[in-house]
Image (cartoon, rainbow, N blue to C red; front, side, top):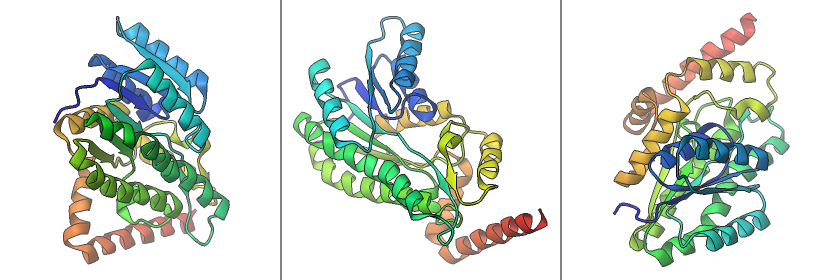
Length: 275
């Protein structure tokens, strides 16, 4: 069933995927609630939407996804301003690198509190509203790192894998109420994700930045795929062509996939040693 209530709330929409999603749905005539931990970034996105799309209606709000109080205040704002919520996009996130041995526990706590528990808080805050409406859609931003099982991004991968598991469970919970769920697993895309990147490895940030630069997929491409996924009630959204192949390989030939990972890990290790 297509979502009828054309209102969408997006976390982390001050830049990157969140801003691109806001533009995608504003172009389709939706009302958009833009949130960010930095209110000025959210307001800038809202101004861009108002300037680009005549007649646009929306709102901006500060939202720290680690704060239960912020989530409660935002839910109250939605109730005040809108009669219902069509889509919730749990997009806000941070990134970490490094292996288990070298990664500080503080980095684990940081990335899990934002990337996983931030999604948990958002879903928990709004699922009762979706059930009461008998319609709506939850979009949870994960990453191919949550499916890949790759080394050297262990804390980030675990947090994003948790988002996939949460989304799978939530899909079953909400299906009887006519509410859809999508989990989005992009690979590298040029965004502001590295602005607060944490890793014990000094070269990790530069490596990820190079991968982002080589990506043939933009944030706008991902936003367009999300819009299609909502419309078609698609659950798993793999935004990069090569990751679709890797995902099939992992499911059908897990040991072969593991050998591919090992080959990549050995290659990266040799590059580090040569430097």
